[in-house]
Image (tube, rainbow over all chains, first blue to last red; front, side):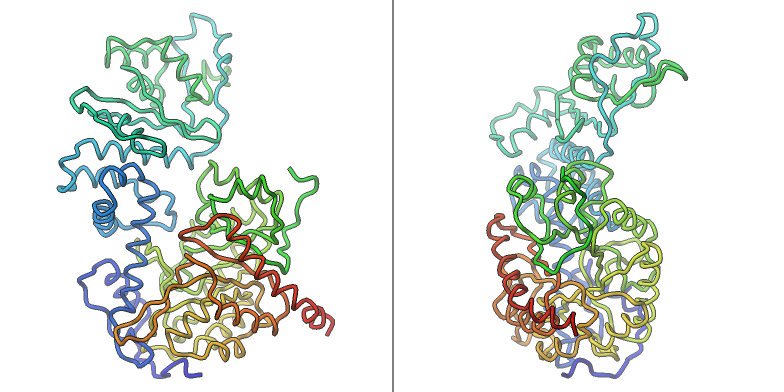
Length: 270
Length: 292
């Protein structure tokens, strides 16, 4: 067996890996010296396997996280956009479950996608879906839990959001478009001037659910998430939309499993 | 939930790499499979369906935990947070086997999502051995080191691959995960003799076997260049090398890896049955070795 040429050229490991890593992400960079085939000669296609594994592998993982974006723009456009993103914002950790959170902002600034102004918000819904999928477990607050709270204490109630809750606010009908482009969805005409949509993503138990939020609801949930008392959050909802309906919103959010607990005071937490 | 807890020990049977596509087939069909193996990084989220399913499957089957992102071959220090996540998964799921790769994937703050090769030098050997020591001390158990599939060689290498791996094992006391497909892929790409590779390998320290599919390509010079894709059946030539290996070692836990273009459950199960048949055919050999 002739496994090695047995003559060390003394390249320090740090330098070797720095050059190797740089050449992986820059397709135009020269291949580092001393990476050879069995005849001891350099071979570009051999190094290209690593380049391709990294960039294509990450692009493929983006397609798994952003299937609706991929369906909207088509395979070729998506691959080109995902590859550009991977090179511009490569993973910073082996926790690939967290990778891709910068993709929506990247899409917003990606000139070839400028003709699809809603695309970044569809990506935000998909990123929120992924985050909710992996979020910590927590039992949702049962609908009856708030029944015993005295009327004069309700305004001071502080509701705790379930750890999986995410909100996406869009100036476009992004949620309608997302639904048309996920499994089982049928793409159809959408009036982009029909107004914006707010989406709420939550995983109260095993399944991720994505819901429309009625007017003012997003501002309301956001303030609750910041720790505001119910009364104050309701004011934020009303400020966002005159149509905001506190009791309908609250009932809908509770039945959706959006809360995992509440506090009235230091000794009355649940 | 199982009546009695399934012990962590992974038997010398065929197992299958667990894929989300098959969670329901497994939990509803209760197939007779020796064990399942998962990529640790896919179960590092805080909660959600992956943990729910893995918990249910672990209640019914032994488990092997296979890390793909620790970057043991990196010049830089190990990512402590990542190592602690591996430790937590070991504690949570009590896998019977725990393995990682002779490869690197992290440089500075960038994670390159592949198993990149290392030069076989004194410097790399010392670094890899230090890192494996740290893994085994932190996680509190033996780690199995997997031999790589490689597409190129480093001019600065001074060790044959087998000698390098044997020396790492000796210095660290780690066990070995022997990927037979990687032996075939690397041997083709580096123009080694794969049977001689198996024969020279420190097989007495192998605790697990991997089998997967590869794709044929060619390099600049038109020589065969095999890619370790895990996207198809195990090649016949790899089955032959597996039989040769098991003929020498006796039965060992043997995993079918199929990570891309994942087939339906029956197709995957059939691959596992083919591996199991080889293990069963060599049972007497295993008993003889154990007795001797």
